[in-house]
Amino acid sequence: MIDIDKILKILPHRYPILLVDRVTSLKPEAIEAYKNITINEPIFLGHFPRKAIYPGVMIIEGMAQAGGILAFYSAYGNKVDEVADKLVYFMSIDRAKFRSMVRPGDRLDYRLEVLKNKGKIWILDAKAFVDGKLVAEAELKAMLADNDDEAKN
Image 1: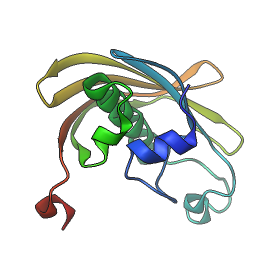
Image 2: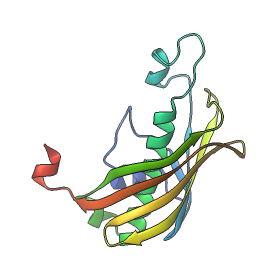
Image 3: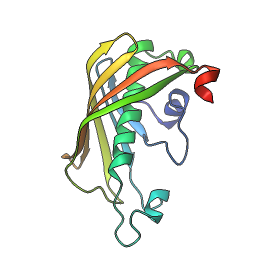
């Protein structure tokens, strides 16, 4: 299990866009993680004020962040210090489907598997569940790269 303190060492994201609360299972080829969805999320101020629905784009981003943790772990194992100067860049989203609404009070479970890894490129099968029910899925492509000055600007 990876708690929020270690997640903050791996991912560059911070509030309000850090979308992984905890990793519950991690192997070189798969990850399980989750995000607790609360009414306190800033996104609910506008999406939607009368009926809070967690946006699909946020679900995709959460799956991508879990995929970033998976890519780092697959490449570097538990050597968290070695990922400080690395970033995972999102390259593409394919076959995205949203199957059910996600609402405040839900726990959004992410499950991702490595479909293919070639060098610095990762292709991931990503799924999101609420109470065991599939709510979203996509194939994500990402690249593990150095966080050089050019990329920071």
